[in-house]
Length: 589
Image (cartoon, rainbow, N blue to C red; front, side, top):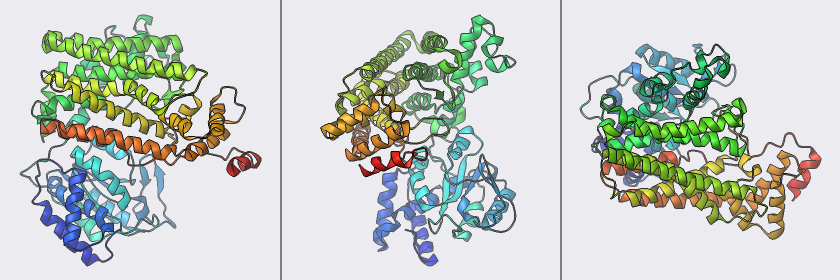
């Protein structure tokens, strides 16, 4: 709900300003802290619970206003929503970045855009676009100001606040996505926040996020980890691919190309952020970029090793699962054949160990050995988890209990988080006091992450070309399948198992539609989200006891970003290819 009258909105914003100046500016408040403060404001003002989200957005905006002042206009991104345009007769087209707005004067978008661009802002008309965070991380801008629907802003608060990205926003006055309205004077005030020196800088992970994202850019990778064979890259092979390379350098070229292909690079971020958190947190300060530049390459190499192992596991997983696409492109075994892909994965494993072992003089022999032991343990447990999954997938007996699936997750997914955290800790010093809580934290974080990943199997993903229902039809032992097998009647269970059989004669759409119905019958999606809640709560409880405070804050941030639930899956199946005769009996059942 948005307060109806302008006078009430103005009054509540002023109350938020009064509260914001009393808050500690060195660290951004968490979502829970923000919610508690907002609830008190509503109670003091005798206003309804429905205003809570709106108050939280306004409070976070006034909190960041001073930080926004410290950033030049040319380093700010102004984000506008499509729905401010006049739906009828708008001459603008959409491009890859959103609405390519024309200055026609037909709506307020052009007015806002013109004023912002005069000041030097970069402007994007694409509400909620995933490209926004990429723009921030890429280093093109340092702050976001924008206009958006209230529900979009509410979902964005947690991630933006915890990351320490300066952000101001004005909520639209309704969620109607056609010809909506906004407090235009608020927008103008926000855009015209002047550039000035500020006394207190709020800590931010943005410098660490940027460093993690650039480690595997082509030029940076070549600089930090020069090629052993010194050959050409695939891009330099004159369009001939591996055929245009020296055969001795081909494996290295494919491996380097895959390392730069894409990903979120969350693992190197974790290692660097943990190291920084236990050595004083200097990289989260305003000059964090300079602090990171002063780190020895051995720190960066250790962070890169985790990602290299991860990339190796992806190559092998894609072969084992028969996946066709990775990062929106053909998988390596599709491009070069299975033998070559296996070999490249093996090369990446060796490269991961070498990144640490070659720095033993700088790190110290004992530190290097401990990190290598952590990586080896993680590697073995991951392989055990993957092996368990493959054996179950290929078994005739499809009896799978939820606890069995969760054990696979604890082996397959959690070790990567544990290795990333423990490596960062060991780079900073002894880890004896951290080993037990970190393993428990990583296990709960990894299990919850994998459940959310399973749920995404029921979402379309055009960017990564992920096939909907691939886990189910591939017979993989997911907790969703285990919950269904546990919750269905005998006849329904037999039907679900028959849908997974390789010799099932039903079309893919029919199998998915019927399986989706059975999953709903068993309450699978609701139960899965409850499991995520359970493991997230356990991870947060462990984080509560972590010291120092900077590391505890990082753990909270990892929970909220790794377990990103800004959108919950509402499984839908495309039935446009099915005939009426195929759909009718499924619906009736």
